[in-house]
View 1 (cartoon, rainbow, N blue to C red):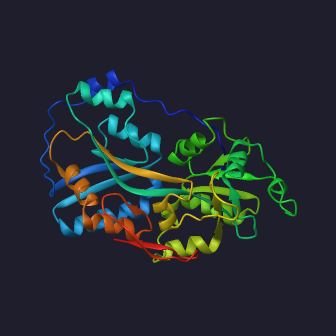
View 2 (view 1 turned 60 degrees about the horizontal axis):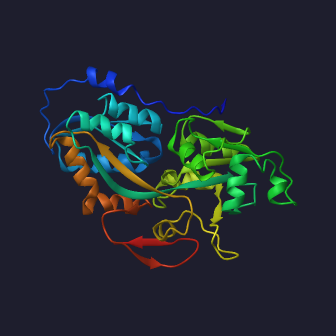
View 3 (view 1 turned 45 degrees about the horizontal axis):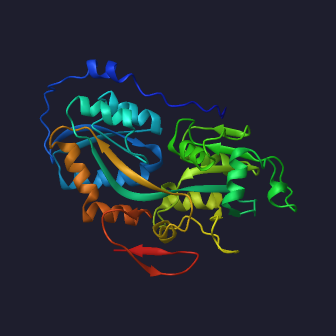
Length: 317
């Protein structure tokens, strides 16, 4: 484990990248054939693995190589032409948009699903109902001991654990605390499974992960993770007393769980290649059903609530 030190992602000097890119690469892929490399925010590894596996089974002459990275590295791959497309939780910045416009390319920005940030604690910790103000106070360091959340708690100093110092979870949480510095008692490990493992072994820890790692209730990996930790329920600033929500699918869809996110696929592909084909697949009915099964919320097809129970709320098309 290493001490967390926030670094601001630095975009590559675009003029340098512009000079390094090939203007007329010899590309032979089509929307359903060929081979490409993509880069994906590591918080979405479980569901993107499923999307790629299904796509390649349908289109047997298509091969998608995927690199799972922190958000900052993911975007750097796209700008350096190391990835045909990227999947992450933000759109292009003005500088990134301008980069493609200078090349006379209209970049693709497609919302494909909704997910959330999950807050997890050790199984021995019973403080699992937080208000958003308490969440912000913990993340910013205003609250640094468990006894400040619950005067009867026998736990000591809070340890905040993220996956990576350049991840989307770090950026998202910083936005929630108005881009103030994160608490000094904050650490980064390696990835989302490492966060879950650390929290499961440390009673004072609170972990921040992408919900996709614990959202698919039919997946054995998810069941294993959920046995190791507790998931915190959050109340929004406008919620009535006692209205705490865990990051269940329906609560994300209704946006009553406060830490929900939009997920985008971004591409600078200048023609209809395999990247465009994979984007179309993820946005299609079949691709959206994969997100649905994974416990996320589809972005391009209508959904409806089919069961209202606090312990297991689901949505369907």
